[in-house]
Length: 134
Image (cartoon, rainbow, N blue to C red):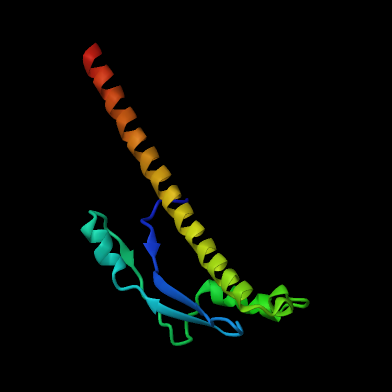
């Protein structure tokens, strides 16, 4: 079931650099693991399990694979446009899509916890009513 287990995050910082005019023909992306996520959560009273993955080519981010597929596709708009600003926009869009998955995971977890809490509260009220009747 969704939300039964705590959310596990894998966090990275993605930097997108676009060459400045007069000729915008280069886009550079830099991906670095986020070592501060676990500490940030602890500082705010949360407990987070942070998993690490290698960035040496063994494990690729989903957005990288999706971008490669789009570039290799027949009649790829990324290749046809020939504008690195469009490419940069696509990279940012793909990263944001990953954030939607994180929000969905936390929403499922909160719904599960709320249902558990409502179940405990319902049991407490039932016990309280039974005690009052006795």
